[in-house]
Image 1 (cartoon, rainbow, N blue to C red):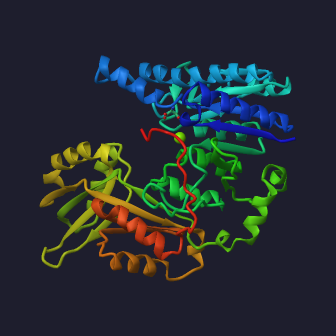
Image 2 (image 1 turned 30 degrees about the vertical axis):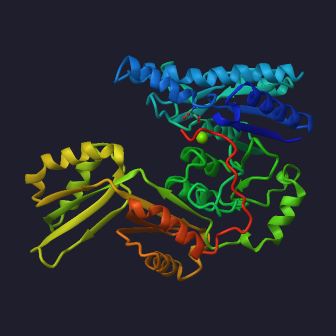
Image 3 (image 1 turned 90 degrees about the vertical axis):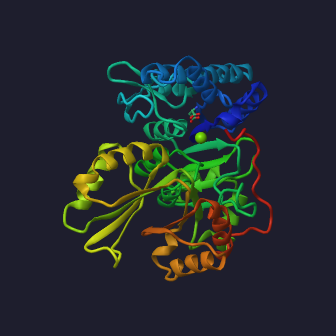
Length: 438
Ligand code: ASP
Ligand code: MG
């Protein structure tokens, strides 16, 4: 018997029929002899619909009230799913985030989990019930209702799995797992069978939309094995674990999948996947004094705007006497504030010009094998140059290389690099089962 936390995303519970199908899956897992805790997202596009409704009332809803509103979506699905599971003859109880003991700070809209006391959930399990927990929400020390940020139900699930010492956290979605690239851009993308948490973290941090970033951080910190899979099929999905050989999981993975993993040479690839990101903009500060302290002052101003900088490049053009150009990328939603703050400091920083470019895209190639295999950057740059794509900025970590291109070149760049690294699949594996893509 294993303890399994199952998280179902919005497209898996989009309507009553979907809800009943999920209930059946929960019951099947129980009948296979496992204990089950379920975390559920709001039905379909409910969260977006609630945001739209609020926007019809005010253009600036108070953060506190918005959070209370948004938690309603998950409360609807948790209670309906509990009813559906009960209807199948298995006792189930629904819990809000607060009841499930998910304690957060008070940063409305992006609260961080500061403690987990899932006592009522644990009691449900002991009593032989299925506990169904509303995702994406918690309660702060001063009793405020908070949300964990868009996509936060993944984090609820992994945090619960960690606190309850679950054997695995299954993330059910509308695709068959993680793919080597977004199947909407690369139809020949292949399903990744196993991947480390470290690589998943890099992919999620650089635009891959499959998992909430903080969920992966939690999984890594507390060694929670994740299984990302489709609720619309019975296929084995993607196993995300830094300890893939955990024998406790043996019974949970179909034997055929284990065998396939061992035989398939693709299981030790140099590259695990390609993420892309269209959400960043670029700012270039032209002709800033090339003297100590200037970069510090520049980025202090940027940090004061709460903007997280991704890539930074400085160059010293020969034409400008003792002056440098500094380019950096940042989330598009922060660009306006940052441009204004820099403009206001023009005299202090003594730069000549401020340039803003929203039309950039970022491609990130991720793979733990990069550590030990030379030539990955050469191959990447070669593939891009063959496709006639110019590289604007470059940044690297031990297991990632990111490049910034023109936005209009991004899709082609992803396709070219996917092919160059031999990631194309011959079967069409990528099926998108549900979701409205909202
Ligand atoms: N319902 C929330 C959202 O749409 C949380 C989640 O689905 O994970 O972002
Ligand atoms: Mg999600």
